[in-house]
Length: 133
Image (cartoon, rainbow, N blue to C red; front, side, top):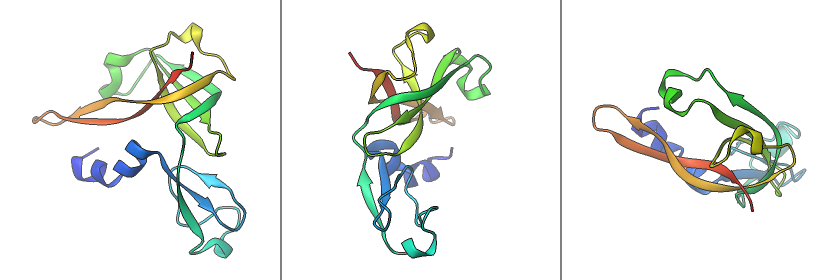
């Protein structure tokens, strides 16, 4: 992802900024301008919410055949995380072996290097998750 585009998403990557529909209360990540449940009723009624960075694994997979930028990480674990706020997000599980990961395990967000961009080697950071405890 080019640096300017990455910069536009820094609120989501660094602060886990999501949105909550003030009509039905559903929380989304990343932020949305409109609630998929309430549709036009939610227009102008979405509020910013910062997720806690905690959650539990509801599904996961081990990636053995990654995209070219991520070959050095293979194999790595990607998981669907359900947060206490109600949002579901996708994140990489770090500092764990695949046999340590289970559905229902608690996780916490950590900041880690995502990649290096271009010849200048601009480092892009973002959220990943590790097992709690």
